[in-house]
Amino acid sequence: MPEYRFKCECGAQAAEHRPMRDAGKPRLCGECGDYMARDYRAEGHKGHGELPDWNSSNAGVGLDQIDECNEIYADLNVTFDPKRGNAHVPGRNRQKYLKRRGMAELVGAPLRNHHGKRFHVVEGQVVEIDVRPCG
Image 1 (cartoon, helix red, strand yellow):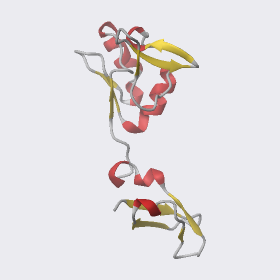
Image 2 (cartoon, rainbow, N blue to C red; image 1 turned 60 degrees about the vertical axis):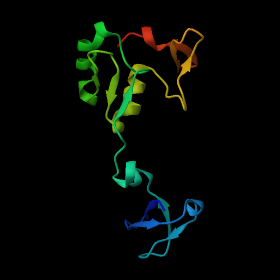
Image 3 (cartoon, one colour; image 1 turned 90 degrees about the horizontal axis):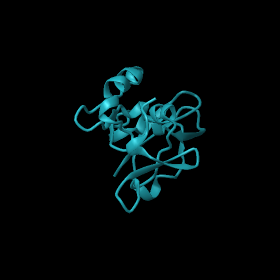
Image 4 (cartoon, one colour; image 1 turned 180 degrees about the horizontal axis):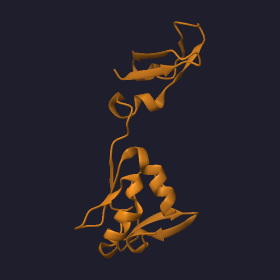
C-alpha cells in the first residue's frame, strides 16, 4: 500500500498507508479536527519530498552548443551529455528549465514524424527539438 502524506492549516502533518482506492478519502486532523489536504510535495518521489532527476534527449541541445548551455543553465544545475547533448535536469528544476527554453512538457511519448524526428509543442506550435537553438 502506498503512503499518503497530509498537512493541515494548523501546521499538523500526518502520513498514512492506505489502499489506492482510498487515496481521495479525506483525513481529519488529530490536533484541530479540521480536514487535512494531501501534501503532494512531501510525497514526492518515493515519499522523500524530491522529484527524481530527469534525463531527456527531447530537451537536449546540439553538440556544438553544450559548453554554452552548461553556462546558461548552471543556475538550475542542468548539465548536458557531451556525447549526445541530452539534458540532465534535477527534478525540482524541470518546469523552470522547460519554461526558460520556451518548451512545454508532453504527457506520454514524444511526438515523432514519419522520419523519426522528435517534436515538442511550444506556444501552440510544433517545433523540431533536434534543431532547436540553446538560448
